[in-house]
Each structure stands twice: as structure tokens, then as C-alpha cells.
Amino acid sequence: MTPPPPPSLDVVPHIIECILTLAIHSVPRPITFSCATRFAAYLNVLGHDLIPAPSHAAIHRMHWINSTIGARLGDIWLLRELAKLDSLPDSSRLHRPIQYHPQSTALSVGALGSIDLIECLVAYSPNVLQGCLDHVICQASNHGHVHVLDWIANHSPQAFLSVYTPNHLAYLQPDDTSGERHIRTLEWWIQHPNLWQPRWLKLRPKWHVQALVHACTHRNMRVVEYWLSAQDYRLIHSNPDRLRQYLSWPLAAAAFTGDVAFFESIYALWPESMAPHVVALACASGNLKLAQRCHSLLRQTEFSKQDSDLCYLLATASAGFTHNDTAAMDTLNWLHDDLQLFMTGQANGSHPEKLRWITSDVPDWPITWDKPFYYCMHVATAIGSPALLDWWHVRLQRDPSKFFFRNPLQGSMCVVPRADAVATLQWWRDSGLISELYDDQHTFQTLIVPMWIERGASVEVFDWLLRHCELSANGPPYGHFATHMIDRACLAGQIDLLNWILSHLTKFPAPVYSANALDLAYRSGNVLALQWLKDEGFLDALRAQAASLRVPLEQSISFIARKWPECFECFEWAHANGFEMSQAMRKRAIDESLYSPVYVKLLLHSAEAVPSAE
Image (cartoon, rainbow, N blue to C red; front, side, top):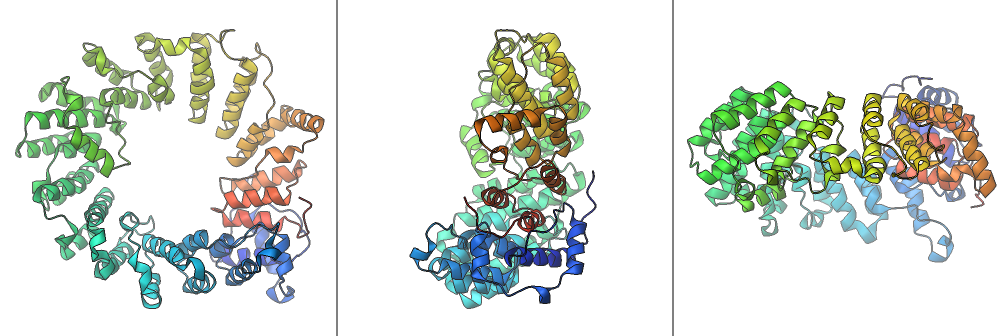
């Protein structure tokens, strides 16, 4: 069934507080529930004045509760009590896990921006105060909590002597669409003397450039205009060549948007920063007119033969990013035919220092720089374009060294084409470029096929696989092969593929029953996959197997949910089918599910506050 929608945001904090209070104060286990509206029902019936006084014993018995949970919920009482438990003599803490974690708690406190929580953290973490404040400053800067930075500057100014967070400061938060909160944080740091310490001399330009790149990528002129008004070039190295090299990346980010007007407005600010990778990102945007405009601007600079090689290398490797077959072909034809930029044997090795600089300064850059032409084939496969594959094959077949297929597992056969998947796979088989991959049945069936399932391959892809690839006795034990496929299909929640596996692999031995499928289905929130395993007899077989080994089946399942609100359905399914979580299982689930506070409360509320025999 589909769970009801969660309650309104203004009710959720009160619901969470009530449920946590019930769990901590040793209230007997309530009726199992699985949806957010039942939280509201409990809230309407119970009040805080009906709750007995708290005790250390209640927290001691539920040792899975820790300070990180208290910080995420804003519960000062819980933080204080956990800190008191942590301060007890060592002899009284034997056989009891530590429940107060100052460092991880500081991360949550800084993200929330609560001064009350920070005061509590400072009061109860004197031995690790500097490390805690470092985390608070980083998270407060990341989330734009200037009032937290002010408080720390007034009450503990020495905390800023060892912390500097350019990476955090560079990124806009998703809910800060105007950029105002981000700008307030930048202003605060620029006015703070810590930023201008000599030790941060090399980091300041990186912070400046990252902020501009991120602003240009999101077309946020408000942040760009702020930098123009502040325009403190102490942030940039005094070397003019280095300045041009740095500022070319915001210009490239503007080109990647594909917006000609926005690019022209940014180019007017830094006309001296034109570089080959600006042309490359213009090609990646899919706007051919913008790519031609960038190339004409680049030709007005010192455009040497080596720059030409580098420009072609970057542009051709980027063109496939458009995920638009027509736009990519138009761009490639322009690069190859109109510009007559030839792929020479030296192109791959031109300016290795430039390529290293690009890779190190932009770690998330998606291009495989050491194998650029192979990467172009990889992109063409990912977008599902046999025509683009043909284009590359015709131009590269004269020089087989351009094909970098030394390890196909890291390349094109590990991706699932977005369109024309069967036609794309057939192209690779007919090309003969990686025919040895199909001969290696163990590799193909144990690594590539599960990867296809995990990445969403359709049933048609596996029909093609059965028609064109021999699944014979030369391969691995097929019970294990079917088990791998079922595990991955449960993770992806592909019921049609699960049915296909049973109907098409009947000529092989039955799959090896494994609790891994149950765990993967639960983790991904696929209650339909859980029910499929039950209907097809997997659950009964696993229980019989566990009984023969005298090991509870629950120990093989983590009960960790990754999705909201599907986690409630999975939780209810587990209880309806006789699964009972021990304290150790519940602790593990809570530790790894903290991204969903409501699910954590569900786990707490379902627990009996009694000493565990574990």
C-alpha cells in the first residue's frame, strides 16, 4: 500500500519530540505503526505533563541513543544527560558503549545553527573543544549561519586561528536561490582577519575561483556582482598569467550553461581570460553558435599549434555531453571538417602540465583526460547513439592506437545506453573491437551483467543477451549467476526483471537462496521486491535454511532504509512477516539511517525499553 503523506512541516518537530520522549522514559512498547499520520495521532492523545521524570537508567538501557540523534533533533536535555553519562568514572562505563560523540555532534549542531545547542556543546566538551568548534564553523559557513560565526567570534575567538574552509564557502545552498545568504557569509569572512593570515595565502585564490565558478554555473549574477563590487584582488595571486588561468574557469562555467547572453556578460568582465577549455565547455553545452563564438574569441588571443591540439582534445571529448545526438554531431562535424583541427599523435600528450593542472584544480571534472578518444566512445555509448559511434569509428580506425581498450571493464560495456540500448550493444558486438569480452563468460556474467541491472537495463537488453551471448557450461556456476541477478534486481526494484529471471533461466540450476536479496530490497525501500521474494517462496526457503543453521534470519538483514516514505512500508512489511529487531539490530539501523529523523523515531518508538540479553 502507499503510505499517507507526511504531516505539515510545522507539526513534525513536535511529533519527533513527543516520540523521542516516549522512548527515553521507558514507556511500554506501543502498537506498531508505519506512517507519519499515526505520529500525529499519538501527539493528540499524549501530553508532556503525563510523562514521568527522566532517569539515567532509561538511557543506559537504550544504548543505541547517542548525542548525534539529540543534536539532529535539537534536544538539549538529551545532550546534557548523555554528556553526564560520559563523564562518569571509567569503572562504571565498562561494557557500555560511548553515547556522547562531540565531533559528530558538532557537525549537526553547526548545520542547525542553534546557539543553545552550541552552548551545550561548549559546556560539555572541554577536552575536545577546539576540534568541535572547527566543525561548527565549517558547517555554519556552509549553511550561511552568520549568527553562529558571530557568537563563536565573541565567545571563543581563538577557534578561528586553525580553521579555514574555502571549499565550504564556495557553494550555494539549494534553498538560497537569490544568493543573499551566501553573500552574507562571504562578507563576514572577508571582514574577518583570519582570512588574511599568511598561512592561507595559497588557498585564497582557490576559494575566490570556486565561488565564481559555482555562481556562473547557476547563472547567479547576484554573487558575481558582489565580487565585482568587493573586487578585492588580494584574493588572487599577483602573477597576471596565473590570474588569467584562474579566471578562465568562471568563463568556462558560463559557456557550459549554453546561454549566449549570460556568457557575453561574463566575458565582458574578463576578456583576457579566454582559454581552450572555454571552447570545450561551449561544445559540451550543445550550443554550436556559442562554441563558434568562443572559438573566434580564442583565435584573437595567442593561439598556437599546441593550443590548437589542446583545444581539439578538450572540445571533442566534451561534445558528447549534450546527450543530444543532432547537437553532438553538428558540433563534431564543425570541429573536424570546418576547422580542420587534426588529431595528431601528439595531441594526447600536448601540454601535460596543463592537463595535470586542470585535473587537480577541478577534481569533479567528468572527462578522462588520459584516454580522451576512448572516452568519446564511452559517452556515445552512454547516450545510446550508434550514429555517433560510427562517426568516431570512421575517423579513428586509421590509427588503432587511439582505441584505449586495454581494460574494457572500466569502459563502454559497463554503461547502460539511455536510448537505443539494443542497437548500441549490437554495434559493439558487430564492430569486433571488444569481442574478447564476450568470450570471457565469467567476467561478463559476474561483473558486467549485475552492473547493467543496477544501472537500470531493461528486459529487452537481457533478451538480446540470451540471443547473442552463449551462457554455456564454460561460464560460472549458474546458480550463483542467477543469485547475482536476483540480488541486483531487488536492489533496483525491477519486478519485471525478477519475473524474467525465473522464466528465462529455468534451464539452469535453481538460484542459491541468499538473505542478501532481502537486505538489498529493504535498504532501497522496494517493498514490492520484498513481497515478490515472499510470494516466490524465497522467504520460506531462507527461514528453513536459517533454522537448520540455528541462526535467526534477522541477523542477515540490516533494516537500514534509504528512502522516504518507502521506509515505513518496509518497516511494516517486516513486522507483518514476523521479523523482530534486537537492540543491536536497531542500533545499527539508527546509526546508518540518521538522514531520516522520522525513521529513527519509528525505530526508537518500536523498541522495548528493557535490558537486552545481548
